[in-house]
Image (tube, rainbow, N blue to C red; front, side, top):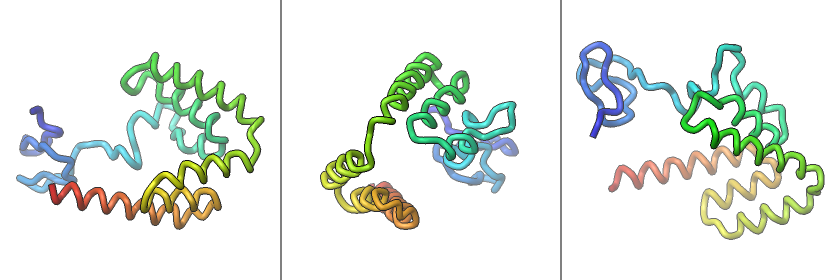
Length: 148
């Protein structure tokens, strides 16, 4: 198995996403794929999230796929996803609040625990609770990963 990252200072090979070198303590040279993924920052200096946070979902998703095209794995796949999102954004105008609330309730009622609770709180736009439930699920999954 190839190492995930190599320390720039001492050359130690790391096979995990540790934030610092286990050999010399130098900070990891891995990009922060959650907060600052490199494929969502370009020469414009404007991060993708600075644009999409002001858009409706499918329009924002379309923009996201166009933004990252050429910077991720498969340009053709990203462009096909952009087309699909543009089609869905065009259809979005026909959806009423009641129809998406019913659909979200139906999906959420088939989930368990933190995911279900997060989905139910999205319906009421109680974002602080959504964040709390998602973080609780991350902690649960990380705990299970450590136990394995």
